[in-house]
Image 1 (cartoon, rainbow, N blue to C red):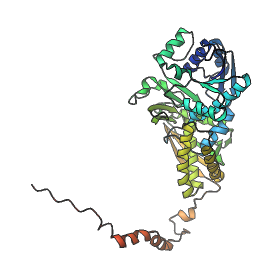
Image 2 (image 1 turned 180 degrees about the vertical axis):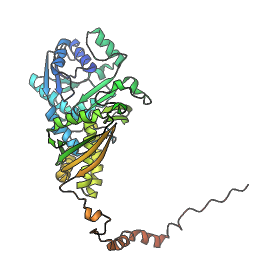
Image 3 (image 1 turned 90 degrees about the vertical axis):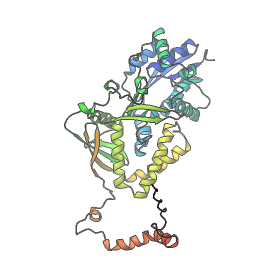
Length: 412
């Protein structure tokens, strides 16, 4: 089926995609590798040479950090996108961009197929397949690991048999995915939800016990809902995220250990590191409490949940996602200001916030005698607010009369 076909593979240099590359070559395909730099920290030249050594006809390296930050991470910040209230979606955000670049590379070389290294149990297969279908339905998607149905130990053995160098052993069987917005670690002993992760799992965050004994204060400045400065220094989003990853990670901030509901219907145990992502979203949400009205905040929280689900489910390029973007963008016009946080041994605490268009009014909120709030008007407000409750009670009887009858005492 693949003999003589040109196939562009999304290549990371890890176990799954390295095995895929050899698998495609052995089936007579002409494989091309596409490595997209999203800030994962791998030396691009090393990854390219590895792909060529394994059997790629050619290997493309593309720097997409800025595009990723500005077109994918930025909207997610405005949406406070956290799947399950915890996961900042860094892998899910990267997949539609990778799929888009796969399509572009396929057009360049005249490929009829694109490929990825996702398994049949994960979410990424859906994200790649659905995104590709949304933008290039004429291309055929191949998923060797899923179609081959190889277990992770079998993949490791296959790699050894074919001389494929991979940073995975039976003693350290973790599956790692990373970009500038975060890092995920799964598989191996982490599949036991009662197993406490050992420190060798983490790279971006210090152990809270080993973090500095003195707290670190940081101030994040926002304009139109996006972070633009760190401690008063204006920075491009990519650089700001990288700097904050280092600062927050040093203080043990950014670890997530959660049971996650995958799109395919199973629950999985996930370990994440996202120092900058969690700190930025925390600060952004706080600034919104200062600048948005109560009804907008309440409705936006519902939108945020659906936004995170759409992103997680691989529905980035869909009409509903586009419509939600428009709503969220409208809400961000006044979300400008600064938030100060205290980072200390794994915790991030809001300690201050300012905004030029803050809806907080100290003259109204203060309990000092010079308050401008007219307390005399409160009784009239309460009378009208409670009118439906009083009317219901007058017709149906008060709550006291409608309580369940007391149970008779048991006779001895």
